[in-house]
Image (cartoon, rainbow, N blue to C red):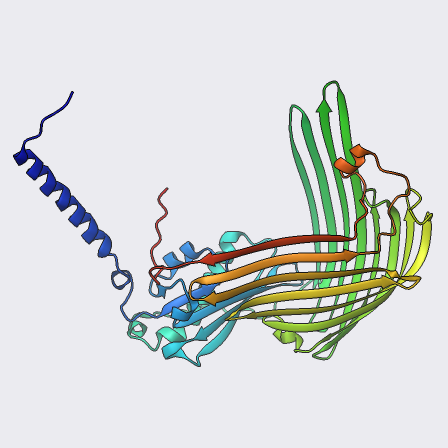
Amino acid sequence: MLFNINGKVKKILCIRYVTIILITASALFAQTPDTLTEKEAPKVFIDYELIDMDFIKNEIPYVNYVIERKDADIYIMITTQTTAGEGKEYNIFFIGQGKFSGMCDTLKYYALKSDSDDIIRREITKKIKIGLVRYLAKTHIAEKLLITLPEKKIILKPKDPWHNWVFSIDLYGYFSGQQKYNFNNINTTFSANKILEDWKILNDLSYYYTKNIYKINDSSIINESKSYSGSTNLVIGLGNHFSAGYYLSFYSSTYENILISSGFSPAIEYNIYPYKESSTRKLTFFYDLGYVYFEYYDTTIFNKLQEKLFKETGSIETNIIQRWGSINLKLTGSHYFHNFKKNRLTLHSDISLPIVKGLSFKVFSYVSMIHDQLSLPKKELTEEEIILQKRILATQYSYYLSIGFSYTFGSIYSNIVNPRF
């Protein structure tokens, strides 16, 4: 059925429609940064992808959050390092820009391995609040600051009955399936570590088992593999730039045709920058010379069931985390002394760079030139073994590449939190 709307009704509906639009628009445009925060509140940019920004905005509503580093009065950069207890050390750098130029500071937060995400985000937020005080003190917001201290005495150095030893046991099981397919995986690890300022010792054991079952018609195809390993790594600091130590390890893998391998290798490392600056920059040169023993499940393509070899490895690694971005590059080369052609060269890269305002570039890559597959089995693999990857395959290279661009534009402010939907 069609309705014939006369001119008067049309006029009334039009007026109401326009009124609704104007009311909605005025409400939306009224939510400018000035109404949400103080007009003179400093602009803040937080550079850390794994942080809960919504939580921080709710807890610290008295600053303006911007989406571009160059628009900020205060640039906050957060970096992490693994601690002795397998937790994390968070380094929170406060860098003043514009009217706060030259005002820089660094705060630290140490998270335990057992700390929940909520504990971590609350502690990081607390550190950010503390770090912002010196900047807010130079604005009219200082009049509203309230600082409190605990009444109880703070114990700065509690007694440690474990003497810095940290033990960790992990046991994981993954199980999935459907009518024609089952996947079962068990992975367990044990570690015993002691890390001090001038030396550390790391010990670990691991076991990995996986079993895939494919049901085709009335038969089943089973792909089963297991591996185990253990290692001890001792490192002694020799000043601000040198370290020395050794690796002791053993390894077994049905996939790689290795019944048992064991090795010992003394090692040395030189860092151009002092180790205390490693949270923001490092450039290291590493070298180790080792003895390796191999025993194989099946005869290899070199007609070996066991062999004893000497091997050397060298690497160069740089890790830089600055306001302009982050770069991590590592080049590793190794070879066996009995045949220099049995070598491997590997390059890892992890780069994140802002190109221009709002545009950033990220790349993660891995490429390896492989000429040292000593454990390749001599017997020819079946199609089933190749397709299901039951055994290691011969190759002269392997690679992985992830690359992308991110472009953000529009309002520089990012203060509002809206959890709906």
